[in-house]
Image 1 (cartoon, rainbow, N blue to C red):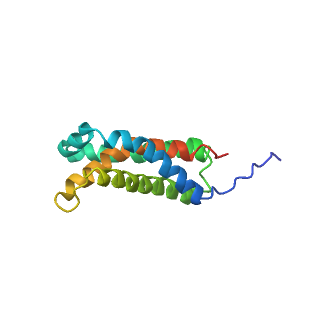
Image 2 (image 1 turned 135 degrees about the vertical axis):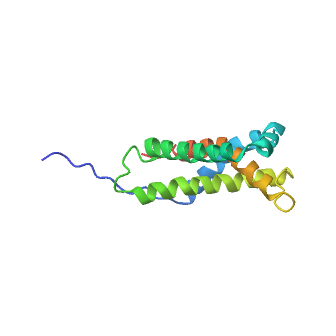
Image 3 (image 1 turned 120 degrees about the horizontal axis):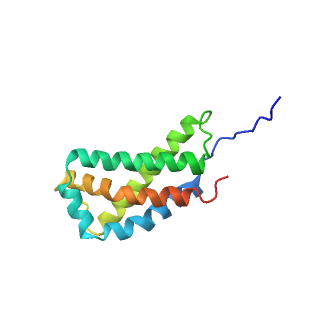
Length: 138
């Protein structure tokens, strides 16, 4: 019989939340401070916005699959999907806080612009989030 490699579930805890928050903040700040990001998000067609959103989730999934889960997702599919979704949500929350602090998140007056800005800035910030989250994984 061949050796069976024991595959354990990847736990998600406060340290992971902190890592995702720090990683997303590290890339959200420089992007959120640029007027280019604000203007691009205002003029981006819906199809392109959906592509940006898809690229964010796709990169999060690819990086989590390769680095955090090391390609062993078969028996941990729910944990994998959860990690990708929670990483995006935490990143979007951090991005929203940064944009709000800069008075560039007009949820009341222009909610569509606020959503578009959040999605646009969340794309690069999610890269930082998942990379920092993967630092201490086996």
